[in-house]
Amino acid sequence: EPILLDKNGNPIEYKQKITGRATAYSALGKRTKLVPGAVAMDLSKFPRFTQLYIKTPDGTFTYGYSEVRDTGYAVQDGTCLVDLFFDTYQESCLFGVKTVDIYIL
Image 1 (cartoon, rainbow, N blue to C red):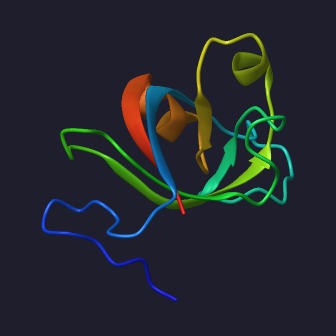
Image 2: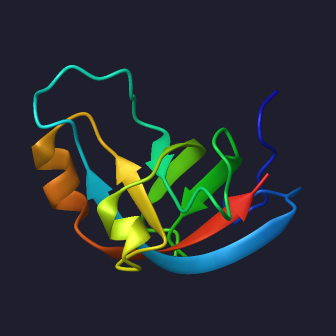
């Protein structure tokens, strides 16, 4: 079912909202089952398949509907709260590092 958004592009219904640092990664040309929308987070706090909606607080970037599918070094060492998967290395570099609002659906 579609996610209902308010006039600012924020989900209307969600369990929790957290704000933190987001980084980006790609498969670097390797075969993967991951697709954009797959994110890496601390699996002890956000179990696999937790459903999310991710965007910057100012609305300049929307990653959108996402699902926890992975965990990674940056998440485990506390460098970031969430690591967003992109199709290409170039896209992940262009994203860089941003502060995002994560809505737990």
